[in-house]
Length: 127
Image (tube, rainbow, N blue to C red; front, side, top):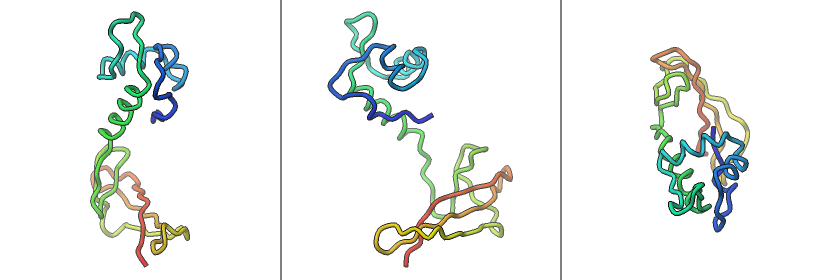
């Protein structure tokens, strides 16, 4: 689940229960985030969390989970990795939407060469 870092205020401190309410998660999730590296104010018990530290932690967590893809690769949801499609089963569909001044949005679909799952990737087509 993706948690929006902008839900917390930068200059405010939060308790574990307040953070859990903001993100709609169990308070144990906040404890797990603290054990995973989210900084807490050590002098207070119960722990207090600075809003800017929570934001930074969630942004770093999101970036660390991203998988860089090359032009011909897809992200396979079943394998949880970057995969190449079986070459003769790639389908390209135009959405009709413009991206900027000179690019059109397209959807590439294929089949994973490892597990056979369906692959989908949004991309742009110049021209």
